[in-house]
Length: 135
Image (cartoon, rainbow, N blue to C red; front, side, top):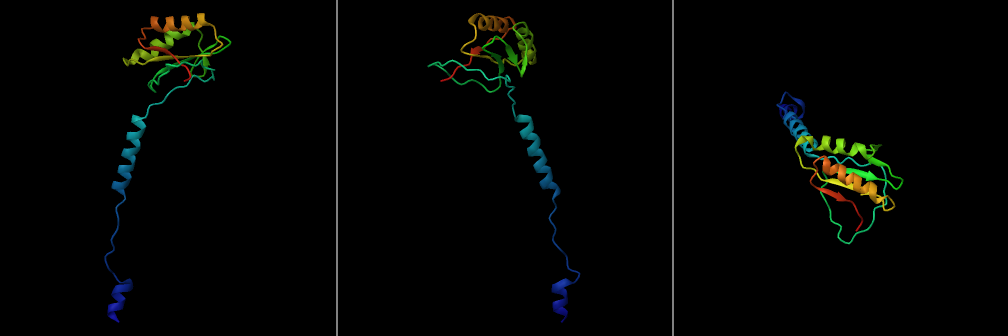
């Protein structure tokens, strides 16, 4: 009977798993993914982009400026106007990173506004300026 008492509920040593290293690894992975994730700030409006046969994909990390069909210039969901393009692009390029500027112009927008937006981005010292199209 003594054998059964030791095996079923005596004062034996129990093996335990230490969860602290596992939790540390999970937090380190979480921090890694948060730091390495890039967030794209959308323009906040839908534009009907024109089609182009030579359309190509660009980097996810870029400055997106939208030109609507009624002449509004949008960045980050708010209207900045043509005059606000230079200061916005200059502020985004202040970190020293050479981000491309992508203008999402509606196919019914005026060409003179598109040219003014591109000119303002060039005056803000942007070197890579593109116009978004559909394939």
